[in-house]
Length: 288
Image 1 (cartoon, rainbow, N blue to C red):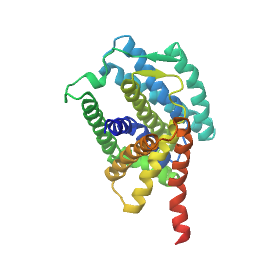
Image 2 (image 1 turned 180 degrees about the horizontal axis):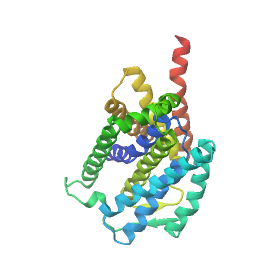
Image 3 (image 1 turned 90 degrees about the vertical axis):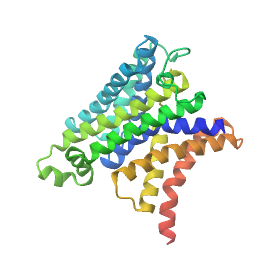
């Protein structure tokens, strides 16, 4: 039971990552690879500031700003220099490896014995349940804020930019600015995931971001499949399914490990699982 509770907590910690990829991939139709670097950036900033005994409520806005700066840089390279969005993300992600290593000073930073977000309040006497409730409340607040933003006039303009860029540009909206802000928001959410995971696992590592874009993409694809199947049209419903996708993805990995599959094959299982999610709906439509 504790094994699956751990998977649930990890799924909650990856929820903001999934929300970030949902914004970049599904709202703006931009394949943003900056994710791998901004996730690690969030973890690196968190670890260094906690080691300098900064309170978590001070660390939080710094992490958000750092992630937003990384996303905005990708947006600027894409919109102002007219470089392909995928290449722009790869360039920023590559540069962030050096930035993250410079911030950390070494490849790994342990946080043993330091206070964290998950020790701020004592909701339950069970440490794992206490961590779950704090993570749940954090994710709920973050999701409500994103839901509110996407329903404002600014949020509607963001969504319209992804749906029909030429139409929204004809209405006088600066689409380049929308893309920059959108990528900044997406990577701020991604950095938040690094902020949560670093505190949960108790360390930050320079390679912690490798492959997280696949994890986030898998979560979003699960959500998209359910959105289409259930015919969800509300913003809140879509965001809730994205969160559910992130949690379900972690449960699949947990089940894989608990069934006796060697951990060295976990990345292969992840890739196969994402492939199945992407391929099955298409095969089903073709068979019909």
